[in-house]
Length: 194
Picture (tube, rainbow, N blue to C red):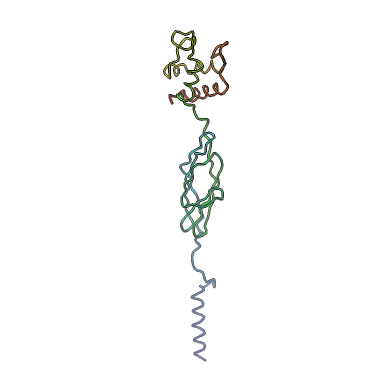
């Protein structure tokens, strides 16, 4: 009888040892006890109408290796996301232990890109302004348009005349709305030699 009691006590001690004193059997710490938080860095806006925005997400907390996803798409090992249009994105970070967190990221859209003088503005001036009798050497206009050096110092005055539709003058073919918009955007963008 003493042997049976002894074996019973040993069995009870083994059960308590295996299950823990609370009877739960799992003395491992919760891998998600520390909440997952996501920091966003290197947030780059998208150019007007383009999908060239980007950001980097970096997660902390939880336990294990992180992987990342935006808007419920496929998870990836890197927290870098690129080729994004302007908009709001939900980034999710999760660990291989099942811990996860989310964060909202806004990619803004930069204002309209400044038109290029060489590619957009100079061809307008060449075709519509530097014509016989107008903005050429010896023409009726107060100055010739032979390049950037002639235009840039007068950019504000040109802008006012173009916006007021007095350049080109009456009797000459008018600039199109698209040409006017390009010239105004170029001047408003600082009239760069781009």
